[in-house]
Image (cartoon, rainbow, N blue to C red; front, side):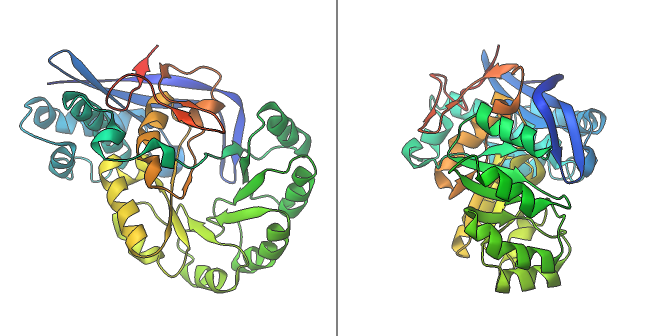
Length: 336
């Protein structure tokens, strides 16, 4: 078994702005696992908000290199458990490795990952397409550039309702709102009624992740469902979100990969919560991995590669009508 990793800079088509950051280029760490001529690929983007850098992800992988390369593990789940100490502070690096392990594991089985997981691609929900914070004319222009049936609108400004009202004039698409922790409970509750009239399906993470009292009020009084993102990072957060949110958005990079992501999805379902998986502007490697587990979900946000000016990989092809997988086994993504 051979472990290698390298950095790619992912240039974005447009400056991407959310409530707490903007970027034009997203750097990402790509991981390769090679054995007997087969290659598994994984990915995790860096993220300053969570303190994840190329340097500390590389350090975490080096900590675990010997265990990975000795090959004394039989499944991605087993490898993930073995890596808990090395990756305790760096789930992003663990995600990239876990994804590569799943890719290689399914290839060894001669199956696509969704086949191994016994999932049906026909059950994949339509992804939303994300519109970052910008001037209203530029947000409208982005919608006109990519006509899509569902848009996720990033908010967190002093004119959020006015933005949604204006965008609504230009499309009949379903809206999803993501405030990225920018609102108060009072704002979220007050906005929810108007947003519902404007064709918004749900609000994602309206309050700060630790504002549990506020979220309880929003959960009880909002006219729209609320979905946890920053409040639901790791497996232990799922139960904490029950009774505060109607559903969870699992980010594989934050959770530590496909292995814990699947457990989080199943736990949320057992609690009667809606499930979603979101992306972090990954290339087609990370997005293809999400697509393989998407049949489990109520909602999905896997538009990351669609936001790129240049993609270093190829994998799934996503249209409003369907997701088309490559002929490759595993997660089906390769470098170009």
